[in-house]
Length: 180
Image (cartoon, rainbow, N blue to C red; front, side, top):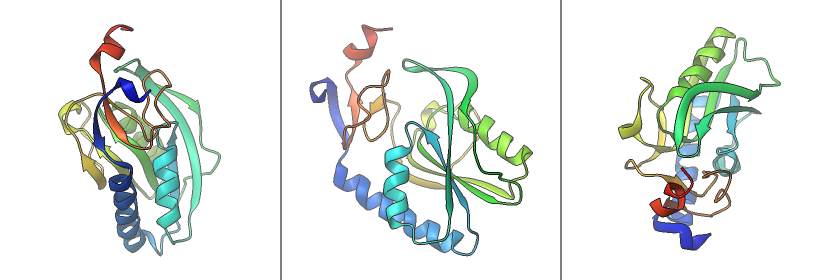
């Protein structure tokens, strides 16, 4: 698994420090709002868990499983695999995301949450890849801005592999080119 990584982009230590820093910012902004922290499965699970460890406020958590990817590219067709259990009507929603890439999936999720009556919908993301953006969305809370490269680890995957790496690395092109 590690041999498939071309370069480590962010170490485990850098990620942990950034998670704590983002949680401090969120505490200030959400301390009196009792938000729903919404994780988009599966990629956000490691980030959301780290964020929650440092987020000392009243909140509820929920998950959605939405998909628009096949291999290394977004299909543009957003499919809800698992919907929310909680109602967002009259609530502040904070979407925890592993990476904001094309933005297509998040654009649809945000539109849906607003349609369902959320007071506010904001995003906190560990990674932002603005060079890949297609949809006009911006995360309010960003851990790291990264170049346009295919990254894995810390929840991010390629065909369901590499999610359990404790760091974020750039996947060797040979790994995904042979499968495309």
